[in-house]
Image (cartoon, rainbow, N blue to C red; front, side, top):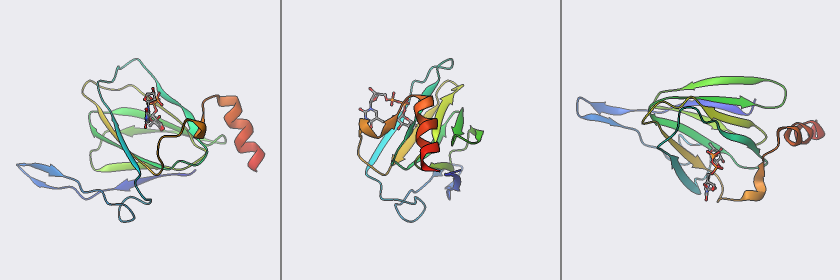
Length: 134
Ligand code: T46
C-alpha cells in the first residue's frame, strides 16, 4: 500500500518536546500546504475520499483517532496517538478518520495546493479508478 509510517525525532526534556519537520529530509516531498484539524467530534467520520495525485503526511500532535487506509485491495486501521509519528499517504489511497478523542489535533502536510478536482469522493468510483490502472 502507498502508506508508510515515519518516525520523527522529538527533542525535549521536562520543559516539553519539539519535533522539527523538513521537506525532503524527514518529509518526503515539497510541502506546499499545511492544515490542521481541531475541535473534532468523536462520533463523526472524516475523510471518506482518495486523492489522484496528492501526497500527505498526517501527524496526530495531540489526542488520538483511528485512521483507516484502503488501496482497493486491502485495508488497515492505524492508531494515531504519537506526536512524533507521521503517516505518509500517497495517491490512490482511500482514507477515513474516526473515533477522535477530545482535544485531538491532526496536523497535515500536503504536497500540493488545495484542488477539489484531485478528490475521489465516491468509494465505487475509487474502486473503478484503481482497477482501471491495473
Ligand atoms: C485529507 C484529510 C486527512 C479548504 O478550504 N482547504 C484545504 O486545504 C482543505 C484540506 C479543506 N478545505 C475546506 C473544504 C471543506 O469545506 O475545509 C472543509 C473541510 O474539508 P474536508 O471535508 O475535505 O475535510 P476532511 O477532514 O474530510 O479531509 C481533509 C482533507 O480534505 C483531505 O485531503 O486527506 O483531511
